[in-house]
Image 1 (cartoon, rainbow, N blue to C red):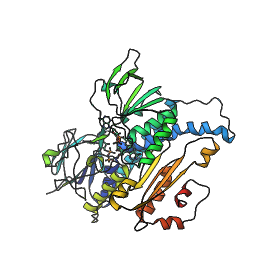
Image 2: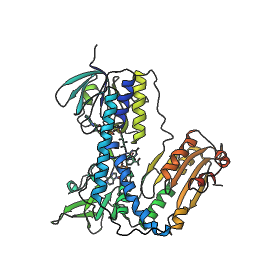
Image 3: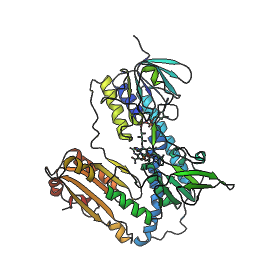
Image 4: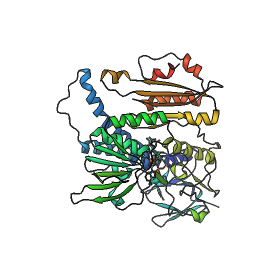
Length: 447
Ligand SMILES: Cc1cc2nc3c(=O)[nH]c(=O)nc-3n(C[C@H](O)[C@H](O)[C@H](O)COP(=O)(O)OP(=O)(O)OC[C@H]3O[C@@H](n4cnc5c(N)ncnc54)[C@H](O)[C@@H]3O)c2cc1C
Ligand SMILES: NC(=O)c1ccc[n+]([C@@H]2O[C@H](COP(=O)([O-])OP(=O)(O)OC[C@H]3O[C@@H](n4cnc5c(N)ncnc54)[C@H](O)[C@@H]3O)[C@@H](O)[C@H]2O)c1
């Protein structure tokens, strides 16, 4: 049977753009449909604008510390509209760049919603139906909004980049990645931030010692926490501000309530049932190690599969599907050594097993820690301490995990992750000469 395309991709985000580009470079006839903006969550309303806001807000700390280094900064002020608009302009620039990438690879793109109508057919919002030998679902995920009265007055990460002004008082619901990153941004910019969470745990999955350190430092920086506190209701006041009932506390006034309670795979109304694609209980698409769904001609990558919701993973999965289908190079992705970071202030970064996971899997593990006050903090009379932790298999001396909190931790961890991926040993770290003076040298000085 003759198809209109070899590959039709639904969703031009991290996974979809990579798969489209690589498939086309293997000679496939590729089209991609995007209902919002080319680039997807990471570029348009995720990693990139978030990181720029982290950079923008971090100047507060640098400016505060500057006087210790002899600088006097007079008339210091901050203009949210300038930062917001500059970030949004950069997002526009990136969207153009991503679109150019598709054009340069001769990937046809449709700026409209697409739904599946069968194992080899897709319908565009315009009503046009097209056929493809393979379909790749890369539709990402969408913020979950818990059900409580007044939730229509709350925002999610989708809206946070567009706020008309810097809120004076922010309530952040959740204590995961997005919650801790935006709590840090607003706190640094001078908003009063309250984090409300339904449990006592922040950043589930990260090493406990690091999480404790982050809690301690952010509390000292003025972030308030209310644990075991669901939001019961939110009421809009006459002056436009909000009153928020959390747990059994008195209502808390706020200007913005940012809900960051996880992201649900985007499969609603996608027509997957027409092709016999099975879904999991969270709406995710279960796939095999080659990202194939229960329908032979349909693949899925990225957040919609709910494996690991990170951009580099969506990209790897998309790349692997394109190589498997059109480059004669089928391969499974390894999920056991994924570096990740939370761009909180200070940031936290991690790769491999936590102490708890290592003890469960390996039994006998050795833990090395460095609990230190970075030189630049000492000089600026800043009390905050960094904490680095190595988790080592006592039997083989292999480094099983590295966990860090402190300035520039994500930048340092990316390089250190190579050592964990390469299965290097503690002896290899010991044999590495320190680079002095740096924070990273702590990694090779733990005894
Ligand atoms: C605020 C925030 C910060 C983040 N920060 C980081 C970070 O620092 N580091 C990191 O690694 N990850 C981060 N992430 C996660 C990262 O953005 C995602 O893991 C990644 O974008 C997933 O890529 P994807 O291709 O699966 O989906 P997406 O990038 O979400 O792309 C899916 C695309 O499909 C489109 N679409 C959906 N349905 C249809 C349809 N029916 N028809 C046409 N188009 C459709 C959507 O509009 C979207 O553009 C962050 C996420 C958020 C929300
Ligand atoms: N730096 C990064 O790499 C980065 C940054 C942002 C987002 N992301 C990705 O995006 C995903 C989504 O981010 P997120 O922060 O929304 O999710 P998350 O899974 O990290 O955190 C969700 C938080 O919401 C809480 N929660 C869940 N349901 C709730 C409910 N009904 N009521 C109250 N609290 C509830 C959880 O306890 C948790 O603290 C992340 O899992 C991550 O993979 C990555």
